[in-house]
Image (cartoon, rainbow, N blue to C red; front, side, top):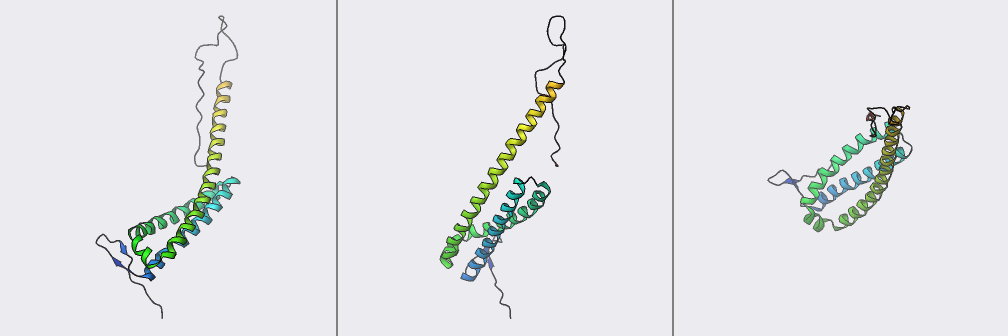
Amino acid sequence: MTKTLTVDMDHTGMPVISTTAAAEMLCGRLYKTLENLRQILQQETLHLNKMELPEVEEIHKQKSNLSRDYHNDLKIFRANVVAIREHSPASLETLQRKHEKLREVIAENEKVLGTIREVSETLIRRTAERVSEASRPKTYARTAQAGSGVSNKIAAVACDYRL
């Protein structure tokens, strides 16, 4: 026989945690989501390091779903933090440890993304400079000046962000 857990709602429709079982159920969902987010970010970082962009795109979809679930449960958690502290104080400590592990993985992921962004910007800038240099005339007018219509500005470069 399966035991069901009922949770009361407040006047805004927010679940109200009033038992140890309800507190532990919510924290258990948060644990699982945090762990899944940590794992998915580690996978994303690995694929980014290898420049496996199709895999990163698929992971992004999973990460978005997990983030949505996390934020939904976090709203409930924040609204009930006093009750959770009362009914399941050990759950708060466990959540803090899991958050710290997630922060470490996020920091590594952001480091890799920052490096990729810098490299990409440098490549685009250098490409634009080379395109600009290639389009400059190689001859001079009688006044020893470059022909008219020459600009020292970097040429425009179009990028396909779907890559």
